[in-house]
Length: 387
Image 1 (cartoon, rainbow, N blue to C red):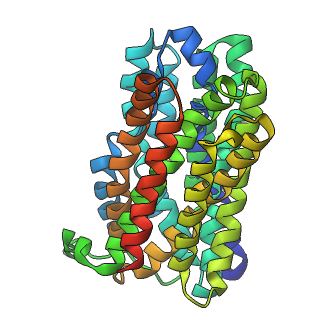
Image 2 (cartoon, helix red, strand yellow):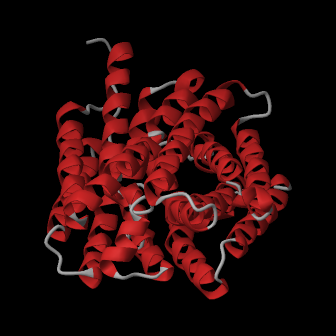
């Protein structure tokens, strides 16, 4: 197969592996009602489940970035996906909440290689004119996996118990690992960076990296908030059933997948550059979050539409963002730069579900969480626009 055609195979397998590896964790929010009932959890404990899967990537993403600049993505990503599958298989026999928390830590360690590895593999196979579209399609793997998980896992949990959902996640992650290791190849004429190459954390001082970090931490907090609170808000505030609320969450994830593709493709042609698309997403998120705190957030129809809006922009932002990050990185150090940006994001990914869950428990409502996310996004918009 020609290089021009095989790059689409690379894109397909990278997208599938991304979706497969994040399948179970992306479905935790959709199963929130079932998990709270079966494991007797409050919202804080539920948020901690999401945080646990994101804790080890704080350091793991930096390690993964350096490995990706030295070794073939085929093995770095593939082995990471195998770790995810093995950990989830172990979680299927975990005795309870604390054991599940511990296993999700291991899942996070394996997942550390998949985000930067898949992004680097796609960026290296596509030229600048199509890179945004390709990266957007690949990053759509996260919400697509989340949409499928939100559709399948709550039904499985209701019929067979939450353990069955974990084992299903293990099987799907294993399929992603096998697919990537079987089909991935390096682009022609590309070799690993010599092990003596040096990259420093001084990248964080660069203006482009400051913008990446500011917008990234803000928007991953929004994404985490949608993951942990969407179904609960719809169930408790608008009185939708758990099943209907989970279906709306499917629509939110699908909107996010569409947003990642459309917004990234738009960034390929936007006269002001890719980061202008990220700024537009920040504005859209502020509008949507604030609207949830008004009577619109208590109307079933209006709230559903608002969550779909937030899915498109609050999840879709990642397409142009990751492309901007990959293109701004120093030559031959794309892996480390992506790992560094994602590692900083992990701080927000770890803290946001826990903080938002605790805030919801303490206040007895969802409005304070939406206001906090709106304020954080507004500060980011103002600060990053000035850089």
